[in-house]
Image 1: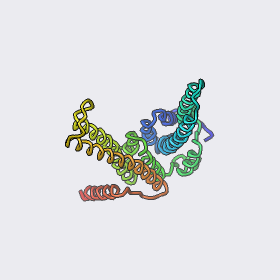
Image 2 (image 1 turned 180 degrees about the vertical axis):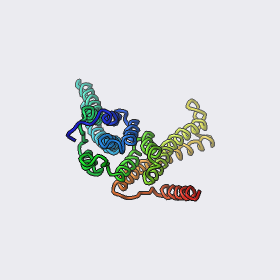
Image 3 (image 1 turned 135 degrees about the vertical axis):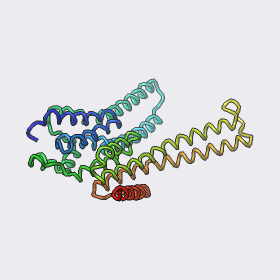
Length: 310
């Protein structure tokens, strides 16, 4: 874009990019901005969808990269500490290691925050900001270049807008609790306009709620099993493992730990399924989650048939 965007269009763009600082909670604002700006401003709509992509798909890539880096550095540090000879320089070397770890973590967080801040500043001056890799690909996918250089009423490709927002809803499953804001907001604000967006958002909401319930269930099982174990042995001060009730408590605790461990392994698989769903939607598929998707589709079809008959 050679001309600067009007001030009204820049506001949503700046807000949408800066919302990344909220680390998860901010995903609401790009969806609101897109819903408010679509068919009014290609610039604001594109920037909001970019910000949404950065905070969902980009966040997924960032958190996975961070986990890999932390694991590698932690293993290296443990090996280093194991080989340190306890000398007068031991505390200095250990302190240097701690400072290095802290600096690394702050650096990784800073990398995530840096781009949105740069994007917000650029949009504040009316620039057509593009995130590395993501920006140009999204512009091509939405037909953004043709829209801004075409006639006055040339808009972004509507189907691709809906697919992008739906896909980011799937990707946001990795953002615990706050990821629900994407599909819920898209469903409430644009569900009546697009049956595709509504269906994808509804099944994503159900899927994410199910994933969240598993999170909480694992915590309840573990804490409940531990509390029952303490009660069965008479508390920490007077352990009575030799009683039959104490053995039952121990068995219950181990079973609760086993169930918690299984759930902890299952949740990442559900996250992967959410990422796969987002990818398939972007590739043009009308993706359905196993069981959940078919049940929701059947219910929505039946509801639409009743409404049309009335």
